[in-house]
Length: 97
Image (tube, rainbow, N blue to C red; front, side, top):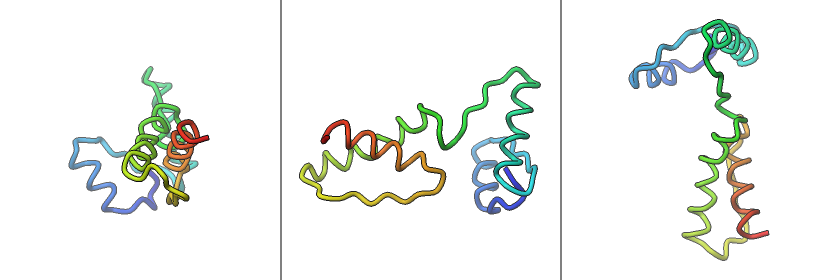
């Protein structure tokens, strides 16, 4: 995580057993470091925002919306990294083109 990551996020990740490494001044620098570490150690880097599996998982929110409100007119989704809105939009568009 970059050195600007909220302390609460760092602490919560650590509470789940994550080995949090603080590196870089922004997400771009932190991501580059994480990708370099993954390559060096023979691991797979999975982006927390734009990986298809992440978006598919987040798309279940869209499915849940349609289950609870089948005739929904509009859906508002907060945007950070873009994975949530991509998943929700894809799921809803697939079921209600």
